[in-house]
Length: 312
Image 1 (cartoon, rainbow, N blue to C red):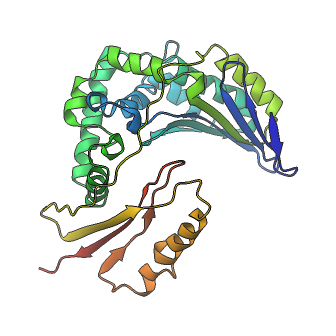
Image 2 (cartoon, one colour; image 1 turned 30 degrees about the vertical axis):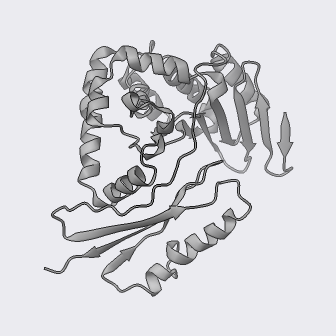
């Protein structure tokens, strides 16, 4: 166990099954946020399972062995809490924000969702329609589409270049059994970090986590993640829109690089504030946004997206 900072105590501990627990005590607040972070994302998928991490995230909210989807919603709403999740290219997260007095319920809900999802075949078929609509929405949202096109071709042929949502073909091919198999391989203690911050005591959080997650399997399918290869190119897509969207990008520092702070400053200078170059140097018809994407241990791209309104 390690701890740092006397005023804002951060404690890191590894439980017997390999699950990592990190807490930060913030006694001046009356709330707690606790989350489960899974070290699996779209970059760890094979071509034929593209989008499965995101699909499983959806299914974890569709009921468990002991709760229906409505039960889950009512449980969190009844205490004024917030429950949410997301899937990224290298990880997924499930988190709850509650008043400190409701921490035991928050842990119980998280454990039920993350450890005991039902994977009902009927719910899988219904959720396919939802995710297929999400895929269509990206096509209809130019500022999202331009980044998807950029990523797909920047890392051409690599899992990092594939959309997190997957494709129409892969999503339609998923079954309850294939989702359950992925869940069993990925959702294990060695792939998880549980973090909590707020008005809490580490010992109490550890007690709750050990009771709820102590039976979690230690390890599953080994992680395989090959580094990407950048493929410089120019890609265009013509759509009937009133705006033209441009995305220019290059590789950048990994998250652990000593000079990453320099790129944070550049971020602010180019588009991160009201006095940035985007606001003061570019003509009014041009909307300019800077988006830096970085990940620990990998050289990920910095992108400069811009959009201009067409004159007709």
